[in-house]
Image (cartoon, rainbow, N blue to C red):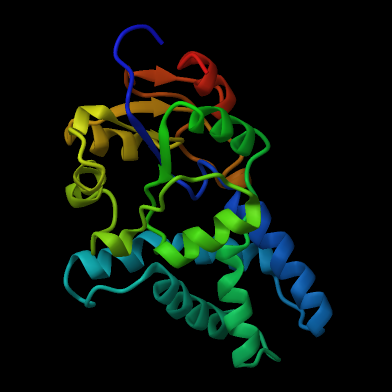
Length: 237
């Protein structure tokens, strides 16, 4: 990448750095087998993710007070277990299943690419996940963050400007010294409106057969890469 480079790079995490769908389906299927609980775990995972944005919107609209993503996930899980008619799960089981979001596996290029970027830039997640979720996920998947920018640090979810601008403020940087990297064009559009640099790489398998968008860049982002390894190469590391 010729010209100006960032000081810090923050990454969308769910779908961009980690493969939430395959990870959760495998995790829940294995757990259900050990507990003797039969369910359509794939459908549950897809429905759980579909509840993600509506649950955060309730916080944005003031229908709920500030609520951590872990707690929003748990509310959605309880509703879905009832809707799917899943029997045989006790409270400990539900706690374990909800923590499945802490046990997500990275895409194959993520750790290698992030390790390269870490050698030159400050790196961290800028995610709607709470700090404890993102920290546990990083330990589980071996993700080498320098800093964890969880939504509970800002009391806001993306794409609220307080998240993107909050990173710059915490790092004592100008917004244009921070790069937002993501597999989601909408996330990058919100970051660009706040003055951040942008990097896109596609994750066409994020939603499995249900992917509807983000197969390619829809704007002239500062970097358009094939994955995080390619992004590191374009940044010269």
